[in-house]
Structure formats: C-alpha cells, structure tokens
Length: 245
Length: 230
Image (cartoon, rainbow over all chains, first blue to last red; front, top):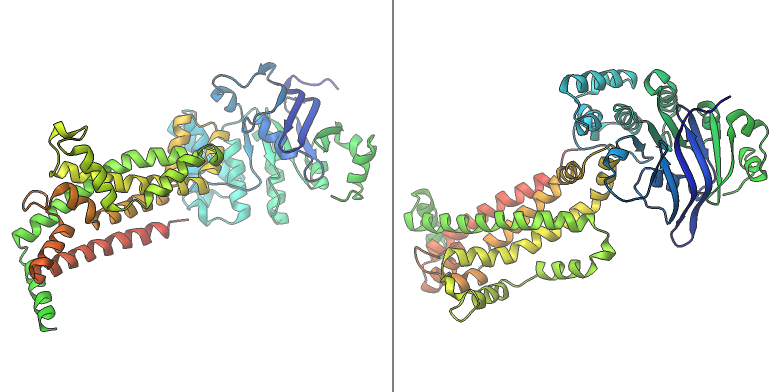
C-alpha cells in the first residue's frame, strides 16, 4: 500500500542528558495514520514526543514537519499550532470544563459561535456535556483525561501526540478514550503518535508500531506484522512479556 | 490594671467617634502602605513570574539575593533610603526626605523582595507545567504568560497580601525616612511608639486595635487564597 505524504521526518536525531537517551537514525510518520510507540521504560518514548512537540531541543539531527525542515530558530508559533501533545499527567486549567476545551480554539482566534459548537460536540463525544460548567479540578482522573483529549482534538491538529493517555484509567475510561482516538470522523486528517506501555492497546489502536529500545528504533512496521512476526529479538522479547525492565 | 482598662475604653470611644486625629493617622498609613504595595506588585509580580519560569540553576544568585532581601530589617531599608534622599545623598536634590514619598520608597524596598520571592516560589510550583500545557495548545507567548499568572493567581495574591502585612506593620523604616511629623508623616506604627512614650495609652491602644483589625482582614484573605478553588 502506498504511503500518504510525510507529516514528520526525523534524521540522526540525538538527545543526551547525563547519557544518550535518544538516537534515531531515521523515522517518518505519514498523514492520517495512527502510530503506537512502545518500548521499555527509559527507551526514550516520552523524550521523542517532547522533542517533536518542541518542548525539548535535540542535541543534533534534522526534523522536518510537513516536508519543511525545522532548525530550531525563528517563530515556532505557526508550527506549534499544527500539533499538540496530551500528557500522561493531565493538567487542566483552573476553570470550567468548557473553558478548558475552548482554550486552543480561543488561542487560534475562532469565533465564539464556532467555539461553542465545537466544544459541545466534543463534550458529547467524551460523555461530559452535562459537566461543561463544572470546575475542572472537581473531575475524576478519567474525566479529566477525557477533557484533555477533547481539548487537544478541538482545534484539529495535523499531528496529535499522546503520551500514555490512558495510564491509570479504569477499563471503561480506557475504552472511551480509545473509541475517541479511533473515531476517524473526529480525527480524519490527523496523524496520531501514541506512546503506550500497553502492547494490547497498541495492537487495538495503531496502524503501525514503533518499538524503541535504548533510544533507538529497534523495529517499525505494520501492527500485525510486528506483533505476529517481529524481526528484532528485543521486540519479540518485549511483546512476549519476557523483557524485564 | 485600671489604667489599661481605662485606656481600652477610651480607645474604643476614639474609634467609635471616628476621632479626627486617629482617622488622619489611619488614612495616611493606608495610603502609604497601599501605594507601596501597588508599586511592589507592579515590580515584583513580573519579576517573580520571570524568575519562576527560568531554570533555577540559571538564576541561583538572583534567588539568593531576593531571599536575603526578603529578610531585610526595616531599619536597614530606612537607612538606605535615608542616605539616598538626604541632602548629601544622590537624590537629595529632590527634597523628598520626611515626606510620604520617602516612606513609600522605604516600604517598596521592604515589600518588593517579598512579593517577588513568594511569586517566584508560587510560579515555580506549577508554572512550568502550565506553560508547557499552554504551549502545546498553541498559545502565543503573551497568552502563555497570562495563563501562567492566572493559574498561579492565588499564590500571587498571597504574596501581595503578605507584602502588605509586612509594610503596614513596620516602624523602623518609616520612622527614619518619614520623621513621624504630625499631620504629614505620622502613621499608625510611629504614632503608637510616640503616644506610648508620652503615656497616652488610649490612642496607642486604639491604633493597636485598628492595626490588629487590619491584620485580621489580611490573614482572612490569606486563608481564603490558600484554600483556593479546585
């Protein structure tokens, strides 16, 4: 199957803290696909998302967004508005649920009416319409994470980065979140990169799987191919639950 | 004991009848300390926000200086402003010594490090996360800064209220630079010192009660901010 246009291309991307945490020779994400990023703790999954989202600067390497290379200089606002990141630890602003979901839309100058329409559609989708005027701080963990996802999807980013969005959620909330991610009416044009510890979730949700090991892409490919016939011994160990980390 | 009781009764009478001398002192105190805290807020909140958002290792020295200035003794602040404004000082030509302006300057020197330092601590505890969340949602730098301040508003208000509490109750600095001149630079704290020395306990007690009432309001506000909404 032909790949659609590239949304993100990484080349020789290196990040070091006290040791090297990321070293990606080459990685390309294509438009409209869902990527599951898996790997043991400390393999660089979250760092990768933070670099892509311009929250952390890499030490070296080339990043191309939508075919244009980014060198870390100049105004990044336009670029930042094409993507977003949902953190594992949700941070909702100390205001109402409605205002939280509306935040990105307001930042982009959407009209009031459109903001209202979009927010209510999304709150319907995440089952929180009745809570629109509740203070965000009073929500449960699952509700808060659903609001965070609705807030991220509201402005239809081209690249949606999810860092363990369902960690610590109960099964019902996990199912709701996965449904929303897989609702391609909502996320039709989005490329989604989701870090998850849960390999079953990666299999359920992703089109393609990226297995990171020691900061490197050890394996990448179609989800069924990676899960049924992994080429890399570490991938096999990880998938079969034999890897201790 | 009877003298103390008489003093308290007379103090209440002065407060209830809104004694002009007492009221004039209270008014000037609130004007001086109010102006000082407004200026300290304008100075300390942006600086504290900026410091709170910076990486701690890059601002270590500035942090230490601010923490030191937070404990600046009022008499030392008064002495510094006095030396600046005295006739031989660099700003002596302005003729501001023994005026309310000099008292405001001394109180700004005392309150701004407190407002800056406490704002910095408040921003540091949550500001970085808020900044990242705002940036990932496409906020401009201005909107990001506004979001950080808004999210940390209770800490910032707490810092301002604490700063006001510090200056309204201080005596050393305003005594040195204000001179405790009746009708011009006499504020509650300096009046209490003077009236106690003269044996006029009723006025001193009355002013003390008003000062306590102001403190009660300040602490109630602080309590309210600390029990912030979720």
